[in-house]
Length: 189
Image (tube, rainbow, N blue to C red; front, side, top):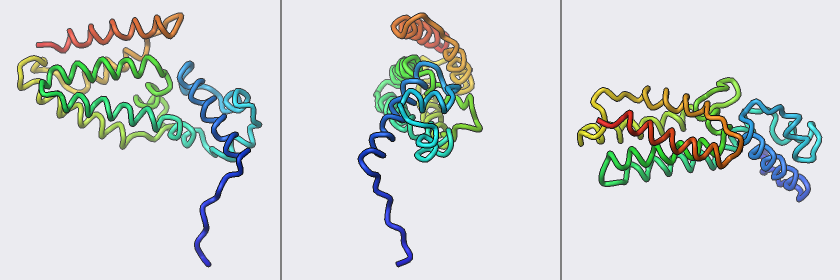
């Protein structure tokens, strides 16, 4: 036989993997992608060798951690595109993406490619941005979205949104909602 069978993890190895992912999710959400791998291992209760055996690079860990968030981001954009009123759909996308980013600083960094050497979500990000651009074209046709809006305006606003800092998650979410309302107002014709 020349083919390799897929490696089946022992239950303790599977538990370690899940603890690593849980720790990485929590740390990335709270602190962004600058969290050292050793801190993730410490929080997960495993040694660095165990972490690197499961995830040889930070890029692989980040991609695994943010797969669900990318799905959520795609679902938000799909929901906005499905809205019969494109302006309403565009507003919904801004509100929900800002909320998603406010809840998870690491995802914002990954989505915005703040760490291009560590994160390779470019194809997924491009798909999302192309879908938003299509929604924006439709919203412009209704006369509700500014005629001079370009996708870079949204990217610039999301980069600014990333700078929101607050003492608590609730305060960050409140600030994010206010920021999203201001973005929508700025984009309105």
